[in-house]
Image (tube, rainbow, N blue to C red; front, side, top):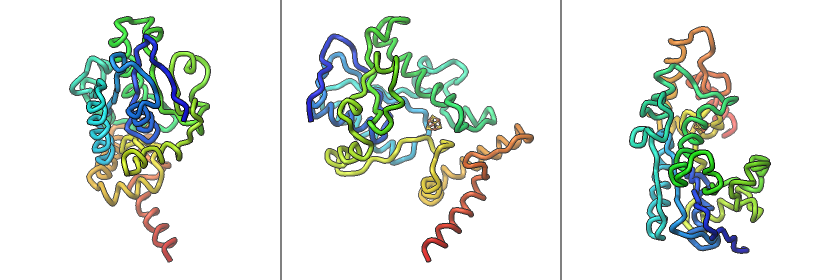
Amino acid sequence: MKKLNFSDEKKNVICFGAGVQSTAICLLIFDNKIKLKKENTYFLFVDAGAEHAETYAHEKIIFQLAKKNGYKYTKLTPQENPEYFRSHIEGRNIYQYYYDNGWLPLPSSRACTVEYKDIPTRRFCMAVSGAKRKYKQIVRKFFGISADERHRATGWRRKWNAYPLIDWNLTREQCQNICLHYLGYKVRKSACFICPLTPHRDILAMYKTEPHLFAKCVELEKRKQIKYPKSPATLWHKTPACALIKKLQIQQTLTSF
Ligand code: SF4
């Protein structure tokens, strides 16, 4: 693997989402496959407060590895660091924010990502740069976009950000192999438990292994129904959570015969 060199005077913010691809970037940095100036490098995990327990456990491991390797690591949460989030968030995690408003995150809208990931990341970069408008000239963000989703890293994004996985032509599957190689386990896809993009198998897995989280999803749908009774209150695939689980369980029973 050819070493990538980013050891210029720019500051580097490694956007760590605790998923497969951003973990692969962290591990390759720790193994010096990506050259950076440590004093100019900041690992950043923005926590919307609704990850699965497995992701939080994994995040702690990367935090410890970053520290062991002499890097700065920051975790931002709405409760602890409200100044990095917009004022209407009022220190609430993503679940509480949607619950209070009687809303559901929508698959067609990026509002949740903007509020709970993009804006805090931008504010962190501004703080690191010491500049406001021109922070992009001082700070380079590293994103875990793999070669199989390179369409997400085009145009102006390529000018200001770094995409080492694309530079290496690494796919998501290869990133998972990198995680397995360095950590000895596979990394789960990071996502909020209320994410509207959750696939069927993960909804069923949450129902079985984290029933308290599934119950919170049901509560969120109920709250939406009460506040806005005229529009459907379904988190996933236009089907209420409980009905969806019944359907998925029947499907699972049929396929096991
Ligand atoms: S994981 Fe899903 S719910 Fe959470 S911020 Fe991203 S798109 Fe929104």
